[in-house]
Amino acid sequence: MTDRIHKVLESWHQIMAGGASEGLRELLSPECTFWSPVVHTPQQGRDITFLYLGAASQVFGTDFRYVRQIIQADSAMLEFECSIEGIHINGVDIIQVENGQITDFKVMVRPLKAVNKVHERMMSMLETMAPSASA
Image (cartoon, rainbow, N blue to C red; front, top):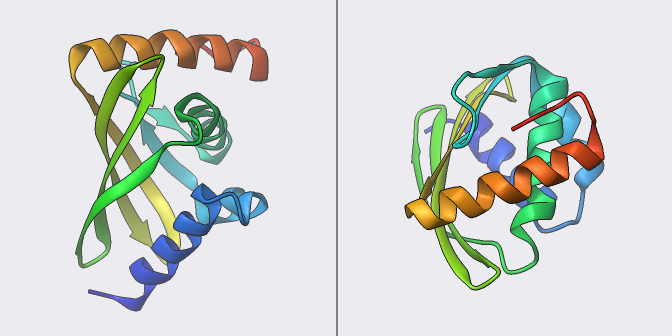
């Protein structure tokens, strides 16, 4: 395990807790790749990753919480839970870090009912945030 991944995760958890959201853009590498559970192609770049993560934080709401964390070298898997409109959502964020920045961010969600609800809500949120973005 490296100190870099721990520093990035500490910053990430602060951002997710709402304490330092302005630091998110700087935490993302300019070449960051975002893998959405509801988009079939990887999204390339800091700006689009920032947009998707910002939308997700709004969609997942205030009961979003991490329940497990696995760290190996410069990678982490963070298991999360929340609910949207009574649908329980369980998922993982898989994060790769290089030089103190997130270079790869993959989100997986289960069960299928949750994936469908996340897709519906993310599409709506992205349309309000940036009309040119779509989930």
